[in-house]
Amino acid sequence: MSGKKKIHSKTKSKLHPRNPLRKRYDFKELVSSCPELSPFVIKNDYGDLSINFFDPEAIKMLNTALLKHFYKLDFWEIPPQYLCPPIPGRADYIHHIADLLSTSNDGEIPTGEKVKCLDIGVGANCVYPIIGNKTYSWKFVGSDIDPKSVDAANKIIDSNPSLKNQIEVRFQKNKKFIFNGIIQEGEYFELTICNPPFHSSAEEAEKGTRRKLKNLTSKKEKENILNFGGKSNELWTKGGERKFIKNMIRESKNFATSVKWFSTLVSKQSNLNAIYDALKNINATKVKTIPMGQGQKTSRIVAWTFR
Image 1 (cartoon, rainbow, N blue to C red):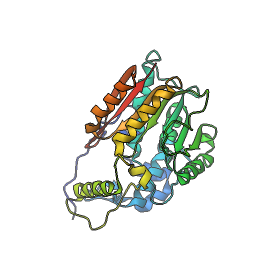
Image 2 (cartoon, rainbow, N blue to C red):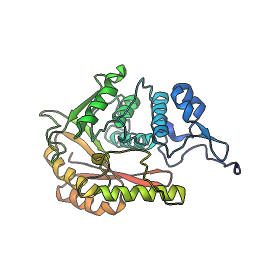
Image 3 (cartoon, rainbow, N blue to C red):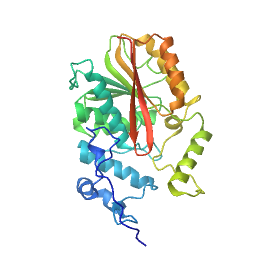
Image 4 (cartoon, rainbow, N blue to C red):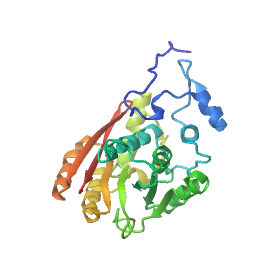
């Protein structure tokens, strides 16, 4: 039975003003760019076109359509059960960090190949480099500890002629390091970005999924369904987000002259004080905290420099 017609805001006001995904999805336009999305488009209880956001295949096809429609990709595919990230939030990181770069460029966002970025944990989806390159023509290096993620990201690059020679993916052989073994001698980056593993264990990740499903459905689910997917190294790491970021901060000191701005997403506000203490200990010259929001979720980017 259909419910009363729901009145939606025309824009997602918490997203960055330049984010093209700020407007509500036009599923007819998305299907025109990606006909494969059509079987997944349904009418919800309010009579609006939508998809089943509990269906991993529907989510993956929606992402494919968004990347084809807004970022003009020819091909995007990820292995089964690998992280299928929400595109609007990933785009917001890129736009906010572009604003940060403008602060040292007379208020103008620097564009083109002269801006070289490093994405720590690029993943099989390669989404941050895709959005950064397509939006601002920045060149990217992506790193990952998972060989299958590296192969999948390279397949995306090789299958899109516009991405060739714009994005390079490097395998991090030593899981103890973040920048060591990736940033090469004499290499310089304008910025580094990172979406670190959120949870500290597989059990914590599973509990987080259960909470998410319960909030969405108001009932307990018998089976956990990761609608956005995610392998262990993408979702959790020993010590969680806090330890990962603190390790990144300590190691960044060794590359103070190789990078203008280091940055990372911080999902848990409770981790901020420990992160600020770590930045104080390495004598970072400047620290910036950039708030971000998507729907009911809030997060932030923390960026630091030694310049």
